[in-house]
Length: 203
Image 1: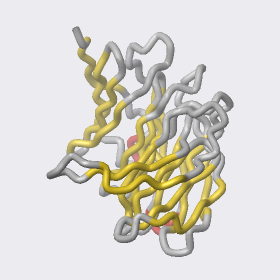
Image 2: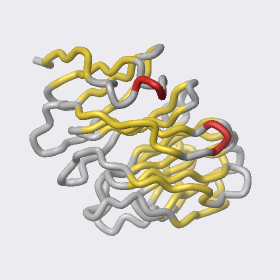
Image 3: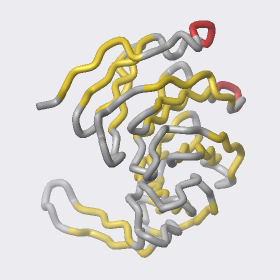
């Protein structure tokens, strides 16, 4: 929450360390994504933009992901948007202007604000998953509306972090005990019937 470190892949040496501030008073986990020529880090209260070519902090944007205990924040980028989400809110920042252009209330079912997973699909949609719920938000034409949400169970008894990815038309969420698969989430007409179609226990 206080520094961004760049490491050269070939030499495995630190090439730069940049001071940032993600506004996480309890140093909750920070989400990082590459957006254009920027490395973007977001905490529960701020989003920091570091220019990769110069390793310079250029902008810090105030956000609010609704994580009352500064739980971890997930970040992704798509269509000149940077999307950050916590357990209570998803925030959309324009990559060019570095301004918040949208915010949607969500609920991932994480009672202790565990780190959420965030990704995007070609739908175009932004997705966020916590230990108990998956929420899908439309991003087409920057019309930020919740398409739908469904209950899931990643088996994380203390709401530990969730990983989230998309494979075709299936969203895959993974917690500490279970991997869950949610199909057909992009089809707005199919909500609210979208639900967990399969689940496997991780040994």
